[in-house]
Length: 177
Ligand code: ADP
Image 1 (cartoon, helix red, strand yellow):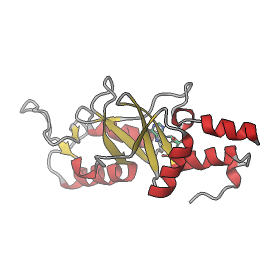
Image 2 (tube, rainbow, N blue to C red):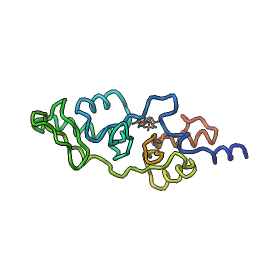
Image 3 (tube, rainbow, N blue to C red):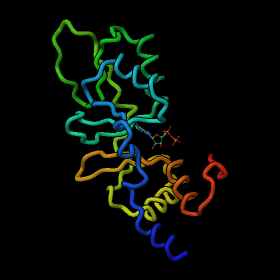
């Protein structure tokens, strides 16, 4: 019992977050450089509930979080109803979209579906605290940063699996909602 308690104290956000070391990197969307087609490829090739939006892949500075279903609906609507939105249109999550040459297709502005203050913890945060935050704030996901750079994500299900592991239970036996 003592050993387990000690272990649970030592587990930190970095131990529970995805991606794990051997996993492919986090799937992110950049704030003003991806096209409609790029984002459509992301939502069709992955099943994640949401995606962090970053300034650029190189910087990994977090701008916000966008839900998969909001992206799908907004792009579908824009393609149907908004003039000039095509596969090569740039998607822009910022207030001021970068100026493009006059010949380029219309920009799709999606700032309104971006959650500008997604909950974040640092990679060193003890999981005890993360669990507490999920419970108290009713979070569905939380982003993990190190020195202000985005590192990973922890979902509610990741937290429940972690709790189940701590309790030495079969994760599948816990009812997820
Ligand atoms: P759930 O955890 O409820 O199944 P998701 O489908 O969003 O929710 O996530 C599935 C797994 O993928 C989780 O372990 C989560 O940490 C991870 N994950 C979620 N979003 C992303 C993302 N954008 N890039 C990489 N991994 C992610």
